[in-house]
Length: 257
Image (cartoon, rainbow, N blue to C red; front, side):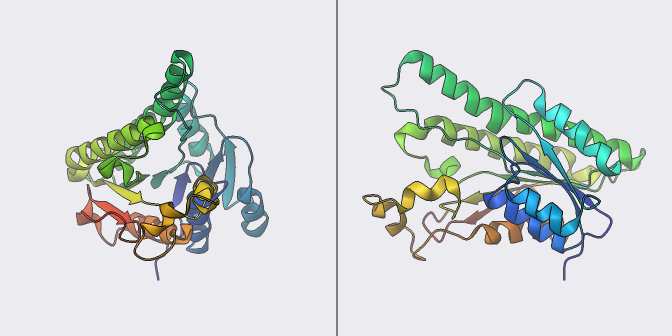
């Protein structure tokens, strides 16, 4: 069984969906978790009641604000004094058709890039610096980063989600660059690219008239968030460090590369 005893993992967007599932799985495996939320603590509050404040630290963070990623990492370090793994899960996906007014178009694109790309870049920079500093001049930093991308990074998305697809494509390039640049220092980076997942974001796929969204999935349904959480835990465990730079598809065979 995977064990994270003594390790501290930062999970963004952990109040619901994939992030909440990952936080629960990591806590059950012995990790200390710093879980973040934007508007409501949601399932994090229940998890904290179960595991206690010594195991789960909850931080509110608006990752759309300038330098929010840096401030978040600093706050996470105050919990246990170290971070062993980073899970970049938080993201936004407003609906922005090409017919939108110019001000709406620019606002939504700026928000998506700030949350989905810039905040992730800032968190990764802070994490890499921390991993290097913790190594104390040795060649092994032993830190792991898992970032949630999307099948949209590879096959595109609907026309009103161009910004979302573009942001997830940027994450793929970012994480592959980190993997290539820092593997020699024991810092590993992975991507998970889900399709439809049973989260609030996917609720639209279950609305009447949208049956076609799920019919394209050969397995027959959206993925349970726990399956993405399980993969996150596996990649953070160190059991497959030579997979660094890899992208792991969890989409029910709706997009096979």
